[in-house]
Image 1 (tube, rainbow, N blue to C red):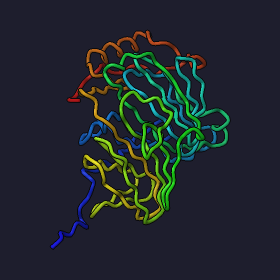
Image 2: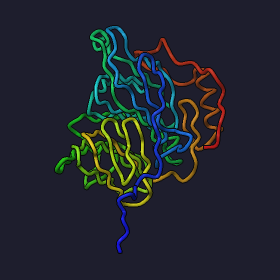
Image 3: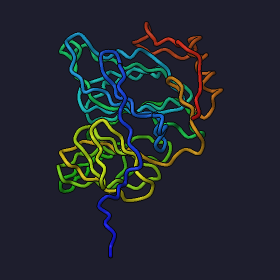
Image 4: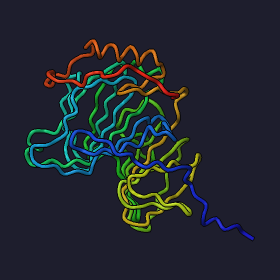
Length: 302
């Protein structure tokens, strides 16, 4: 007799977004979490909004530093003005990918543009951090922006997929990855099935809608870490917007403190002292403010 596998699930564990405040906006912090620090090289996952503010309000993330990572910003709604210490000045709008490689050190700010602020800004999107492999941790900082029409898009009945980083389903995104990873957005009609691309570690995050795997469902603002290996199809029980992240884990643990990621605690301490002593470069056009260091580095187990 064949066993009934209707209750089998591809889900290993679930992580609910924890609410945080970012200026006037609410942010859902998913990674790092006590039960799971990273998925592949992805070390940080924030869900921003959705929010619609009164005219005059907005996001004002003052200049702050990063080392050892790449920030990946992707919006569903709204606009953010990115500035960094390389001199980059780039509006981020829905559907585009903003990829900033910190390497040995970069400073950036993220603000609501004046014209958007005056209208009453909306904001909805994701910001992720990708930890760099050890050989790339001290690389030169770099910035790249990839407009909506440069992102590969595929469709099948009931499913539309955009490959935001890495390679999946036979296409490769233009984003400059430093280690094997994948980052995919998918829109599913109710009843449609999503086949995750293979990767050593994978997780899906439901932005809106609901996914089912076996006897488990994944509600909005929840990440489901999938069991390792191939397979693990998920079914949308309602119209669903989701993303998948995954990739090869790095060869050694990563320490995360404030805005710094490194394989070395000593390197983070050094970066903290450099920021406190204002030895990082300034952000052209946004030199008057910065986020001060308010604590000394402390480390839990990576």
